[in-house]
Length: 250
Image (cartoon, rainbow, N blue to C red; front, side, top):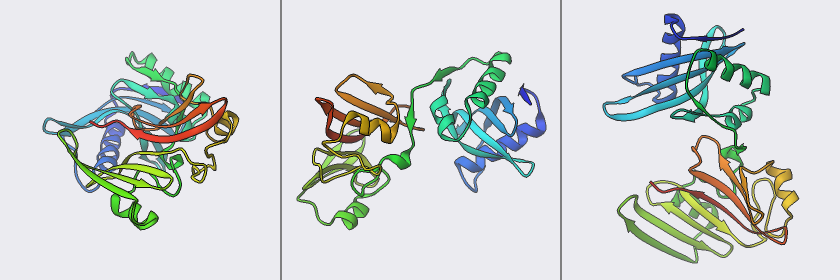
C-alpha cells in the first residue's frame, strides 16, 4: 500500500498522540499540527509541527511504524522542509520503501527537500571511552582527574568546561554534555577501533562513505543533528592524524 493521506481523522489522531508522547512523555503538546502522511506498508512518514506558545518543539518529518494496529514513532527524520534519507536507511528502511514514501508525498503535492548525505548514528560516536552524551562528572568518573581544567563563561552558551587529558581534549557544557572532543594520539581508538595511524580505507570500512571528503578530511554528519554535529578524521598521506567530534554552539 502506497498512498499519501491528507484528511484521515482517525490516523491523524493516532499520529498526533504518538508524536506528542514521543517528544514530551506524559505531557500533551499543544498545538500539534500533522500535515501530509505518506504510508508504505507498515511505515508512515508524517509532516508535523507544534510547540508550547511561541517555542517550536516539533518542526519536520517523523517516521512511524505500525505495531499491533497502532502507530508508534520511530524517530525524527528531518527538520523543517528537509527529509534525511540517510536517517531512514539507518532506521532499517529499504531503498524501495524510502522511494515509495517520498513519491507518495510528491504525488500529494507536498513541497520538501531531500538530504541524501550519508550519516552515522550517535551511538557510533565514541572516542576512547567517551561519548557525546557524557557530563563533566561522568567524564571524570571514567578518566579520573584531568591534567588541566578551565571554566569559561560565554554569552551564548553559559559556562563551558575545558578538560585536558594525556591523549584526549574535551569541551563540555558545565551543566550539559560534550560538544567537542579531539585526539591526535594512537592510544585512543573510536568505538569501531579506528585510531591515529590507520588508513583511509580503515575509516570507510568502519563507517562507510563519508558525508563530505576533500582528500584531507573524512567528515560524517550525525543522524538527527541537522548537520550541526560531525565526527571527522583528519588525514595526511592517506593516514589518520587526528580524530574529532564537534557540535555547533548556538
